[in-house]
Amino acid sequence: MSAAVAWEPSTGRGRAARAPRRHLVSVPTGSQAQQAARRGRLHITRAGRLAVTTLVAAALLAVATAAFAVGGPTVDHTITVRPGQTLSEIASVELPGLPVGDAVARIQIANDLPGAQISAGQSLDIPEVG
Image (cartoon, rainbow, N blue to C red; front, side, top):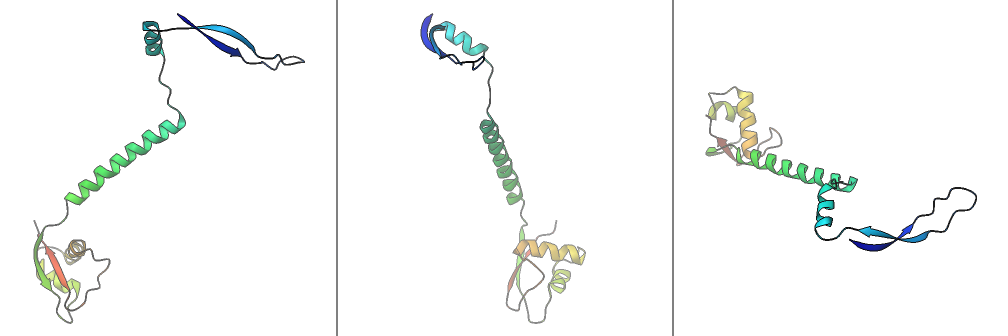
């Protein structure tokens, strides 16, 4: 055992608060300190819990992003839009096995189109169906 100096805090009770007093406290050393450390519980502060939660959320977001990025559509072929063509016409001709709405959605996803607007001369990737 070793000894260390400690200050006894003033309690602030009664009429006059006492001044803190110095006294010796025994401190475990060596194997006794290791045993005392094993007996103690792990206390995670609020900031620690926030850090752990943030790391777990970031890891889950990275996994989800990677899962969706891998599952992108496979391009079967590319076409060039002719004057007067609409996206629904192209979808019905190029993807005849699907309902027109689903075919339009697949072409939009494959080409990162925000809407149904296309222009003459534009190249469109036609996704593989299957």
